[in-house]
Length: 350
Ligand code: NCD
Ligand code: ZN
Image 1 (cartoon, rainbow, N blue to C red):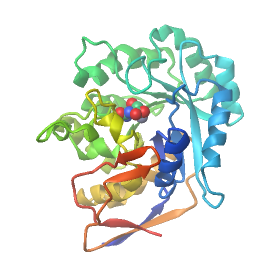
Image 2: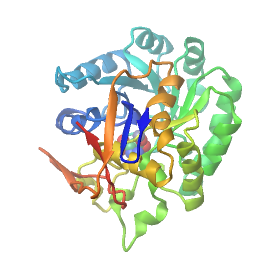
Image 3: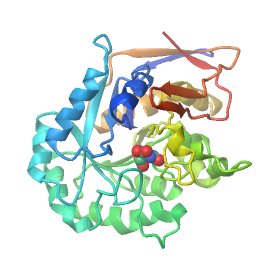
Image 4: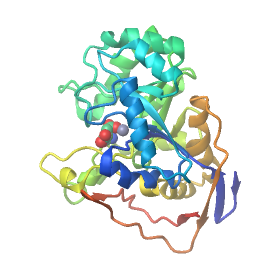
């Protein structure tokens, strides 16, 4: 990595948590990712979800068909864990290099998660096989019990679900996806190297006030929902230090504006288009540019035991902040981009 006052060159990042969707939307959003990232862990919560090695194979073919031949971008697929998931199929998909990990959604926790897990013990045989095979488990860590306050669901998940899983399968590699709380940061720091976490740009940059500023702001609604400032500070503290257990997962989750701006708008923030510029500015604002590369390009690869990317990417800081477009136009309608509500001076050099 090279940094000077107004230029930085880092290993090309990876996005360890991404929603690429399918069909026309996928075609429209994919370039926003491969513009700045070399690999991405692709979430399986399509409708219908990516349940089997066969589904993953077919999704991989569809993704690759949307990527121009000249572009180097590796989609790393995941399977959607259900109570019916077949352990042998998971192992086969992993050995054949069709998938890199398995995603666990508690049923009803987030967008397209109704096929997720209800009775945790039912997935234990699959977790056992994954542990033996070294297949990472990626977790959406929120309980779904409606009697638990939505802002407490992540903390309760650690105690009720995650800690027992870790006790039962101490060798299982686990990524807590898109963590949002101090409790998660503290728990991950207190555990061994088999447990790590992704952090999104929006949870680093905003707290929950953003959702209610002057009215209800659907484009700042995501799951897990933005939290109080004290939690944001805990995330910032580990991210800007480049702590090895924490790495970038944008959780870029595009939804057409027409389904977000609704009496029951769906959860998800579309941040992939300028994620790197925004993060660079954020690290700069915290005088932590020297740790940007660890967060975006090194820690995640190390956890997944993958080589660091050979490609580099360079950004320069200009005198003027740049103007981000408000939305990405698709054939099905616009998708509003994440607005970080801060000036961004860093730009990628092509
Ligand atoms: C994601 C989506 O839209 O698929 N939404 C979100 O708010 N993050 C699902 C998820 O990752 O929870
Ligand atoms: Zn997600």
